[in-house]
Length: 197
Image (tube, rainbow, N blue to C red):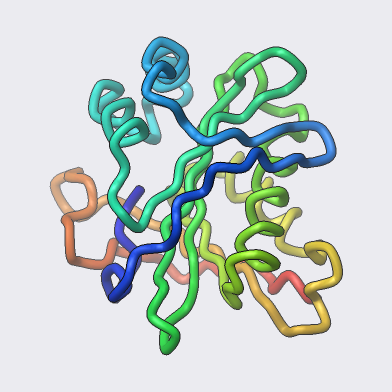
């Protein structure tokens, strides 16, 4: 996952070991034996075009940074994708980001938004975050539309607390390189409505 502006918190979030259940999906923590299924997901051309080098994406999913938590997305008995969060745990800047990859065989069926909603509920209710960021590429119109629809829906009663989900759309720096560690990505001014509206 790309580093959020401001860097990583002063303490790492506790490890997540539980399975999170959504309306249609389950999110289970990534295991070291998920290499083959992660490779299938990240080598899918519709995923690789947004995530880059599949071998690096697999390695990063299995060996995340201390601030990151990864989950396999399951629909029934099928593993259909990967979702992760990065958490800033410093109480002054408490927030989290979400990134998701759904294999193209399962896209367009509402499973990605259900996975995002499930992880958002956990981050807001259990982890205590007050702001979530999802940052699809500026030219990933499918993801922007899906997140836009999701951002207009409250996440299980959190609307009254003024919690928001902002979408910061990102483009690659000049020359097409991926975002550089420690530097915020280049952005364009597109913002999706808050969750509580």
